[in-house]
Image 1: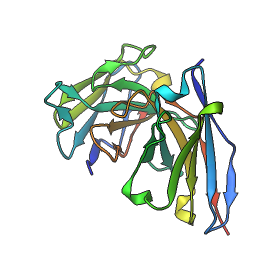
Image 2: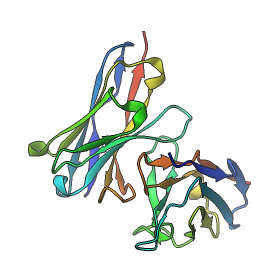
Image 3: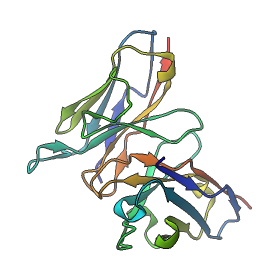
Image 4: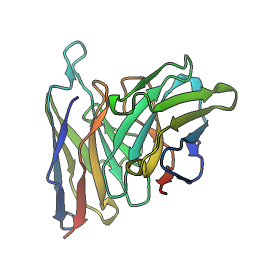
Length: 119
Length: 113
C-alpha cells in the first residue's frame, strides 16, 4: 500500500542539527511532491516547505529559510529534512506528507518523528 | 501569508447530531481561471498524523464517510458532519494550498456532548 515511513525519535542539544528521513513505498517516488509539516505538542500544524523529488527543487517557508534543507535519494525513494541551529522551540513532531502536485492537498502522511531539543 | 481562521475553537455535539466548522481565509483562495477553491480539510486523532478528508473545498477523499461534506468558495468554507459518530471525535483543520506558504487553521476540537 502507499505509505511514507519516517525515521525514529531524536533528542538533540540546542545548536545541533537533525536530519529526518521519509521513505516512500507503494508508488513512484518521483511523481509526487513531498512536504514537511511540524506540530508542537498540543499545537497546530505548521508547513515548513516542499520538495519535488524528480527535479530536486525546493521551496521553504520564510520562517525556516537558512535553517532547513530538503533533499532526496531517488535510488531508495527517500526524502530528507535537515534542520540546523536547533532551539527549544523546535521541539515538535515532524511529518512528511505527499502532494500529487505542487498545488494539491496532502493525501498521504508519514507517522511523524518526534524531535526533542533539550540541554 | 494567507491566514486561515477557524470557528469555533471547540464544539460538543450529541451523537447523531450535526457538527459545523467554519474556516475563513484572509484573502480569496479561489482561482478564477479554473473556478477551483484551494482548500482542504483534515482530521487528526490523538497520536496520529492528519488524515485528508476533503480537497478542493468539497471533494471527499475515497473511503471518507458521506456524513462528511465540505462547501464554500472565495474566503468562506464549511466542514459539516451530518450525524456525529463516536469515531469522529478529533481535531479538524482547514488548509489553503492556493499559495505558499501553505497555511492551516488553528484547529477545531470536536467532542461528544
